[in-house]
Image (cartoon, rainbow, N blue to C red; front, side, top):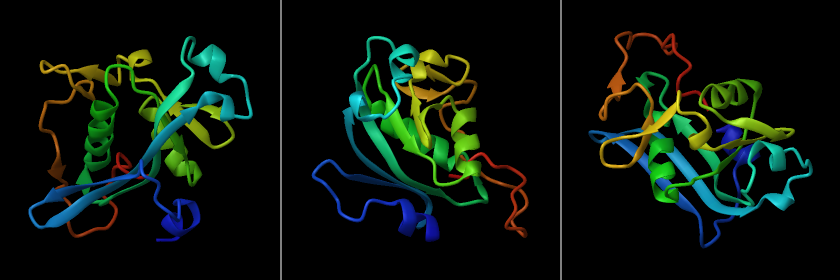
Length: 164
């Protein structure tokens, strides 16, 4: 709740989108996205070398929350956004804390400004690929890979896969 209050945008724009990943009647993850922007808005110019030929971020991950006992819920929400953004998505993520930044970097996000990370899945075929339907998905994962962890007695799942 603190992260949502401190880092979430307080007013929706016409481009705001919310996605919830449901397991039965329970939410396993929530994602709030905003529309993209010109990369000229970054303070640093490093994005020019990191993303040659690209000038626009397609979407902003404003908030992502995933249940700690449900592995991969956050990944599936990001897959959904990448699919919406098309063949050449470029997602911006403003990490709320060091743990979120580290997790985003394991998924291929790179820092372009302090706390601003960007993902171009085409630059990370080891992490992102297109499935037989031509849709973005995590590399090395089957089409349906969400599952509840075995240890449901503890709030520590032993995995930081969806901590953001």
